[in-house]
Image (cartoon, rainbow, N blue to C red):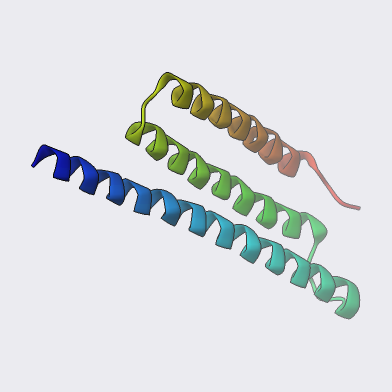
Amino acid sequence: MVRMVLELTSVILEIFVRFFELVSALLVVYAGLKAATKILLLEAFKRPYRYEQIRREFTNKILFTLELLIVGDIIVTVRNPTADDLLLVGAIVVIRTVLGYFLSKEVKEYHFD
């Protein structure tokens, strides 16, 4: 009985991990297509978009994607908590957090002419 509960929990956690990975991938693709479309409209048809606004929206979606991926990594670690997994997830979280910090800092400070 306990084994069955553990297997069911493992399957459920795996579904959540795959869900977060899928949502993250779709969000990045959506954000990239949206940003590219706005840039094309701005350049070709002189639509009222600003590069700064496009960049900020794109970066915000990337930051959110990084947070979703961190959630997935944490779930994987909870499911298989070996020392190697903990170190790997810790490194990934640090890298993604630093990347997110610098992306958000850049988007606040960057101004297009």
